[in-house]
Image 1 (tube, rainbow, N blue to C red):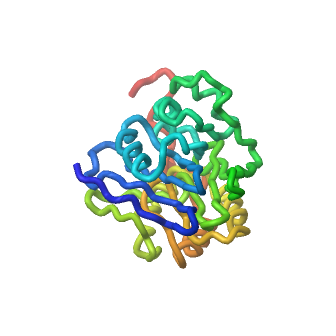
Image 2 (image 1 turned 90 degrees about the vertical axis):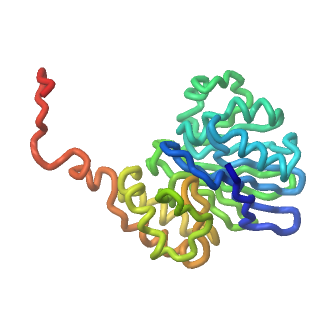
Image 3 (image 1 turned 180 degrees about the vertical axis):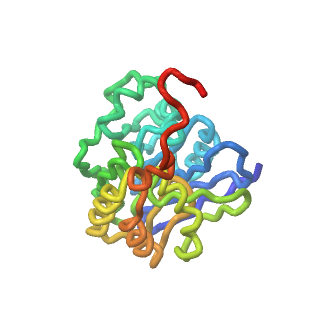
Length: 267
């Protein structure tokens, strides 16, 4: 399989935010994911580096850009296996890296083989900041119930890029994938189904959109789909603020009539 070259979203004065390259040929039945690398001087941060399935490709992309010993932080937006099931592999090849994840999920990490809690930093529900040794700051912004009960986004103050986790995700048809979506009106059709099903409610969407609007976000970098840039950022936030999803549309998933199943019956 051929791979797509790493795509720089920002690169200036030894500070870079990169969408790592991905396989051009997608595998049937495997969810497509994005992985991101931030370099700040001699320090590197990974955002949602993914599961064991994509580890070889992501490792190759990271190693092309930095010494693996410089990876000091790995930020996980939430606990899903496509996000974090490669954690043991990353900790083994990045011996100085610290894991940052919601405090809700630290006790689940042993199920992925993690037993050294000293390498895990729990993010408090209200969020916080991650200050790199060169002085650059990453804000860890709450995004609870979008879709995980303990989800966080990460905002790099220097590049003004928001790593948004599952928020802003798109699901492309086979062969239609692209890295950058500048035309939101043309792109939204790939986003709507995912967001209506995976986001918890409009209450959560609106709260997050209002919170993120306080930041000067120039680019939204989601864990699935395409990066949103320029006017697409505001267009997405306006759309997401009004989205009816999850429990708002619960009849779509359960059905409006009485269930055909009754207690004690299988048919």
